[in-house]
Image: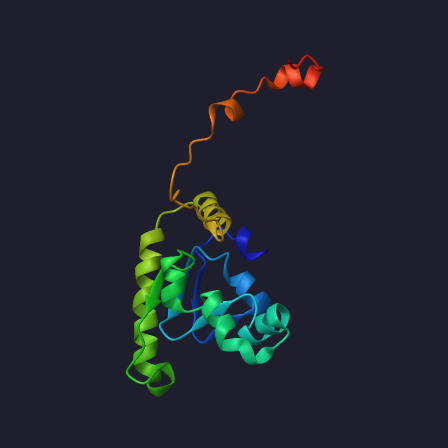
Length: 162
């Protein structure tokens, strides 16, 4: 949690597999970026499959359910940007990969230019707190029968119920 206390911008770039305790540490960045073919999770798909189904061979099923791809995590607002990779992947062209990452870093640093240390810390706190929070839109409204809605709780608690 030391990174959460820093008074400077913290930008994290997941370039391959961001996992386990390191994934938790990276989540406190003001900005979390991922290369387009990277994965990011608090547990490996093998580990999750072993825990959930007692069967590591279901790792592909676990990975799908865990939503660990850059695209999934951007949609869930866990990360801020997907950094493109050169054709064939980042490992095929280090210089192009570095240029894509550099451009994204400079842009995000420019966005935070002039922020105070307190603003940066508050931004990290708010970002970290919203990870994992979800909202659901109601699918239908169900009308409860009136006799179930009208209950005098105070009378029931005091023993004066009719």
